[in-house]
Image (tube, rainbow, N blue to C red):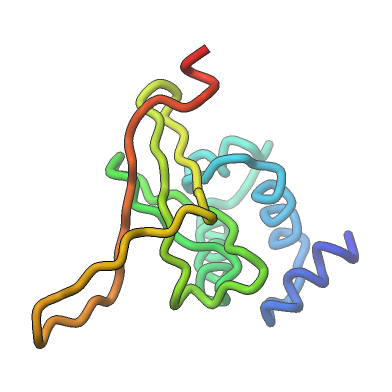
Length: 136
């Protein structure tokens, strides 16, 4: 068991199991967000339900956040180490060329002013275009 990955899980109060460590390792190796199907394809053999439960556990403990990029499949990306997912409003980018979705945590989403008696629960900002690799 990788002690660094186990520590990252324990920091978020997630019990480090073999599956959780494998999923975390894969997410750390990615430069873009992954959906459940994307993750499933990276394993030789995996139980889809276990994989889904792992993602839900990671999301519940603010290790990952979900992205609705408009493709119909929810994508998941790692949160910053200090994230509690209550203030991490940033821009996501979906490439029309390769279909990958990227997080830009250093690009803050614009401030939204809602009318009186409206309360925001969630905000999703996805910029669509062509990524640097597809432009080449």
